Length: 138
Image (cartoon, rainbow, N blue to C red):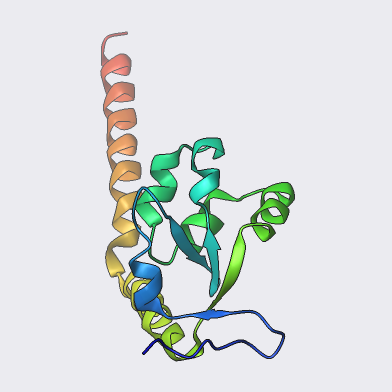
């Protein structure tokens, strides 16, 4: 027996995460962006960033990647024509808890400042050594 089709209060079809994960093939490519489900299969060849980018996200949550790229308002409007439904509310915590873990890990990482401090310190030392060397040779 098939699952009963569920719809949101505004009539949009709900899809389960397991169903979306299976749509990672050459025949069908679905992605999730902000809990909305998009069938991007027919758009693969037209995607300005290349079809590989969409295929990497296929069957999963592409929200972070979509937002990081900074898509234009035209691209966002175009995506509306590809929306086929929404992620079922019972499955939303499965992807949002993963996102929260990543954000927490990044915020709690104390070594971010070393990525800036060490190169600045190295540049200061090189500058100081250069000035000392050029002063001595005069």
